[in-house]
Length: 356
Image (cartoon, rainbow, N blue to C red; front, side):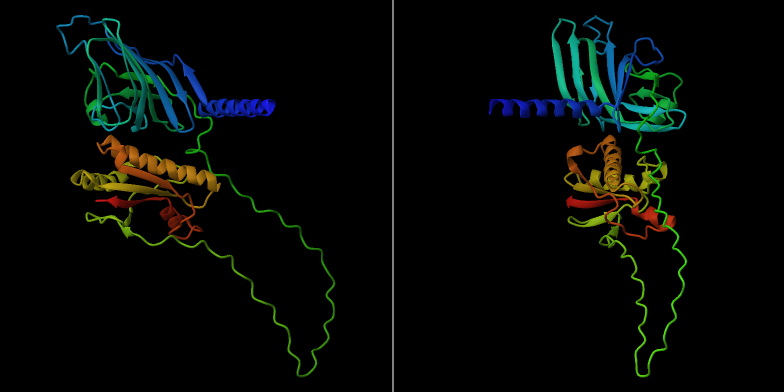
């Protein structure tokens, strides 16, 4: 009995270690970056299939207690106007902060203050801090991105200045090549099996049917049943009601991708405006894909699509607790999947109003 319990415990431990190891798919120690006087630095970057985890350190050399502003250090959570984001200058794209973990501040009197998790649009401020470190979790940049800037301000403001004054900005940070990127890889091509050619057969002579007999008719071929379309939902507008589901018509995705295109912003801003006017409103985002590729990967892809929409809203100030998510993959089509012009309609996100 003891041996059996020990074996079960050992298997659980090994399984836990294995699953943990599978989470980090790439690691970059001491990644190249451009040094800025008075700024922080990135000591390590880790990657999962969908996240870029940045390990950041900043040391404050100002020890004068009378200069309060310079001797305090602040970290901002996702959704705050000063929250970090990754900015790809070449592709003019930004990637959102998801959350910050393990924030550790060393004060000038030797005390240590820690914050385990920061996932709300709040500020974690540490007065008279000499050193601060943390790990920031971001959406993983796309396949062709080789470097990003880690910046604290809105991209439009950042681009309008010749030199950033923010102490936590890090520039030209290397991004490793994405080796296993579901977002950017082409969906697997399903080859139809090659049927062997039938051997020629000598036709047998058919006897004429006797009078008053019925000649058998060849039964018609059965058509392959099409998937049942999802229940129709209303288009999203300025007026919404609790318990109803609305489609974000102008929020469409490219095949096998979940990055939000700039032309989708007005639709999301309309949803953002409604939620801002109704601070008690809670919603559920449902992600859908077309039917190309592995159904399990499509469910994962639809989850990343709703996560991208949620990140957009939280980065604009909406509390994450007000947004729930669901992923359906390609199981609920609203249009024909045999043509691209209609298939793209199935790559969508719907909004259900849970509470007004």
